[in-house]
Amino acid sequence: MQTEIPTSAGALPYLNISINPANVRLLDGQFHGLPTEQVLAWTWQRFGRRAAIGTSFQGAGLVMMHLAKRLGIQFPVFTLDTGLLFPETLELKRRLEDFFGFQIESLIPDLTVEQQEEAQGPELWKREPDLCCTIRKVLPLQNKLSDLDCWITGLRRQQSDTRSDVGIIELYSLDQSSQRDIVKMNPMALWTREDVWKYIHDHKIPYNPLHDAGYRSIGCQPCTRKTGQGDDERAGRWTGFNKVECGIHTFMSKKVDFQI
Image (cartoon, rainbow, N blue to C red):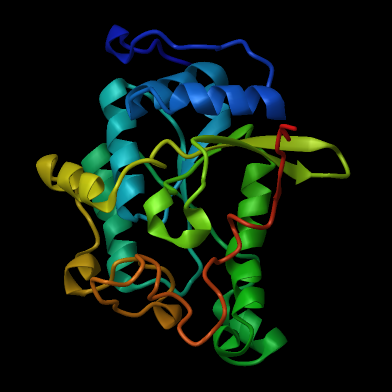
C-alpha cells in the first residue's frame, strides 16, 4: 500500500498533470529547482509502486536507494544480472540487501552465457558487444519496463558527453505498436561525482571495492577496465570499440516537445 510522504519532503508540484512531451518539459524545469528528495517524493506520489529504481550499483544508485529509504518510500529495486558481473558486484548486492532491509530483484537473460555461446559463438562481447548487450541487458529490461509506468535511473550529466543533457524527467516511447510510453526519472542528473561519494561516505553506504582499485564505472567483467583520473567516468567500458553505452538508455525513442 502506498505510504504518505513525510512533510519534510515539502510541497509537491503538478501531481495530477497529464504526462505528455509539453508537460514533461514543464516538469523538468520545475524539478531543476527542487531537492532530489522532493523529486523522489513526487515520483512516489504520482506512480507508487508502478515506479521502480533500476541500478547497477554505481554510486548514484546507492544514494537514491538511501534517500528513498530515509523518506519511507518503498520503490521496488531491480538490477540486471548478465551472468558476467564481477564477483564483487554480486557480493555487493547481498550487502546492500542487508543494509537497506529489502530485496533487490535480479533480471536474468533468457539465455545463459553457455547457451549464448552455443548460439552465437564464444565471447560474443569481443566480436559484437552491441548484440551481447542486447541479449543480456536490453531484452530483460524491456520485459521489466512493460510492467512499469516509470523507470528511475542513476544517470548523471557529468558521467559522459552522451549524458550531458539528460533531463530529470523524460518521456520515452516504450512500444510504438501499442503507443505505450514510459516516464524516465533521473533524479541524480545534476549531482557531481564528488557529491555522490561524499554522501556515500557520510552515510557509510556499502559500495563496490573495485571503485577503490581504479574502476570508476563498473559493468560486466570482460568489458570493464581501470581508468585514469582525467578520463570520463565511463571511459573504461568497451575498450577498443566505438561504443559508450550498453543500449539500455538508447533503445527507446525520446518524446520531445519541440519549441519553435
